[in-house]
Image 1 (cartoon, rainbow, N blue to C red):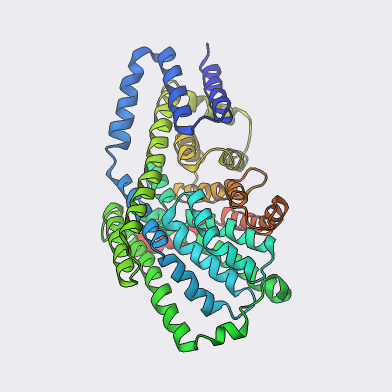
Image 2 (image 1 turned 90 degrees about the vertical axis):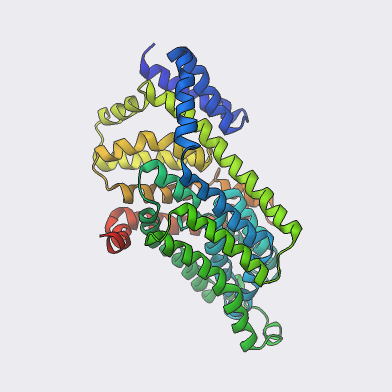
Amino acid sequence: MSITSIAFLMLLAIMIFFFLGHPLAFVLGGVGTIFGFFVTGTTFFNIFMDRIFVGIMGNFTLVAITLFIFMGNLLTISGVADRLFESLRYFLGGIHGGLGIAVLAVCIILSACIGIVGASVVTVGLLTGPMLLRYGYQKELTMGMIAAGGTLGLILPPSIMLIVMSEQAGLSPGSLFAAAIVPGMSLAIMYMLYVRIRCGLNPELGPPIPAEEIALMPFSDRLMDFIVYSLLPLALIIGVMVAIFFGFAPPTQVAGIGAFLAFILTLIYRRSTWEGFLASLYQTARASTMVLIIMVGASCFTGIFLGMGGGATIIETLKAAGLSKWGIYFVMMISLVVLGCFIDWVGLIFLIFPIFLPLARLMEFNMLWFVVMMAMYLQTSFLAPPFGYALFYLAGMKFEGVTWEHIYTGIFPFLVLQLIGLLIFTSWPALTLWLPSILYG
């Protein structure tokens, strides 16, 4: 049987078993084991051991994933995130759309640390959704803000997705973080401007907090709450980014310091409890185990797939199609969006990067820009109807009176803004590379 046929059968087997409802990690590892045995014999065990113990377990930088997740869990489970939202609610809630802007600000701070799409959307949704609806925000706008904001953190430092991408692409985490800042913050600003302008034109979509409620808290108290409960968590995130940008410490050490400072914040705010600490550890263990086991399964699969020439076959097929450089680029990115609707980003990175990155180098794309664009397209896949991950998590929270129609209608404007951002940063790569060029030359 030809290599092309075997590669096609491996990909087909993944899709069949995945759609039958089996966990992704075991699908990837199982398909890799079956085809590895029939193609290479018992030597496939040597390939697996090398990729698991040397490639993954021996990679000390991946410890940063667990520590950043722990930092995010400390901020959310301890209730620091609640106070963060409360302080922003009173500080910005007096203007039309101010509560929505507060939601997006909380998303920027929290979802970057949480790093898992489902956990991010659910955390932000449970924290902000009921309050937005209670204050009279339109259901469609509320759902759109939660979905878009909950996935935005995946492309903002210190995103664990960017850490994994940097490892797989052979890039420094600091340079990738710096390259992602301008695109990520640009999308955040576009989202906030959209909410502010739309609520300003139609105040019924996002009414301000009643003046009577705001009057209960003097401006000086609101300002002090904003400084204490908003600026300190923001300073933590900025400090983590600055330390990685300027190489003060490796990502693993920075993540450890960040987790320790998050714990100190819970003590300062008197939000630390033994139950909350244990819950943070438990949620961190669950999320870290999920990420690592998918890494192991995907790494085993790609070891066999690439070892028998499957990646080279796909590259030659795309080159033989007669597409231009940008034609191949959009084929890769559209494939990423489609696959991202069904496969978690952890498995997708390990599956796609070994195939797409060599092709991108062959097409002479700047690798830093290319990886950031892959992150942006991957984020788009989580919002893309009808199968985007974020949409199903929103529906699963079962907000009162919210239907699928509200979710699909609400996400559409944010998806349009996302596509505008993709068009801008695809057309002008220098915008993405501007900050890394300043920081690193």
